[in-house]
Length: 154
Image 1 (cartoon, one colour):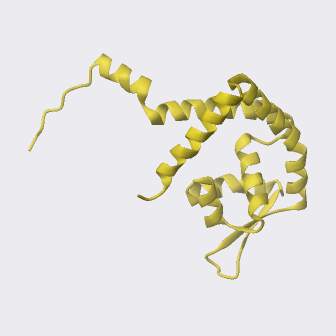
Image 2 (cartoon, one colour; image 1 turned 90 degrees about the vertical axis):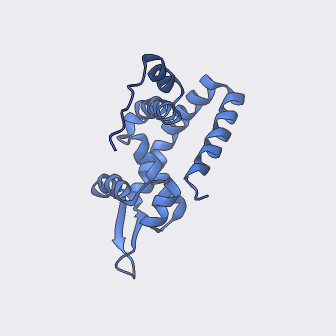
Image 3 (cartoon, one colour; image 1 turned 180 degrees about the vertical axis):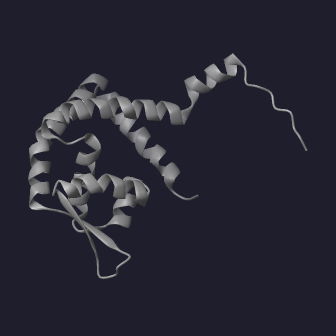
């Protein structure tokens, strides 16, 4: 059956562009990422790398699968993001006792890089919170946490 489809109108497209949750969240994420990347630039770390180092530090010797779940990332993307940090000697990814399980762990250089980057992260965080204001920041954070429940199975 060949069903004829109607082209969306300019008004429909404008409505989608203005209200699409995915598009708006991604645009906001890019703006925030750019701000953190700019502030973290002297450290040589990007905001995504800083976030990975924090997650690995929190989990200790973490299975990559657990790390991916904590960061709400697929394992392939996570592995691609861990590789540069491993090449820089900031973390290791090694096979665990079960060859299918790989463990990520910060190195001493990784702990030092994280400590050195912390004041820059604090500066970026302060800038975001100050520009939004405490009340809007807390509301946004709460909304983002509620939004992340979408990733959980029904």
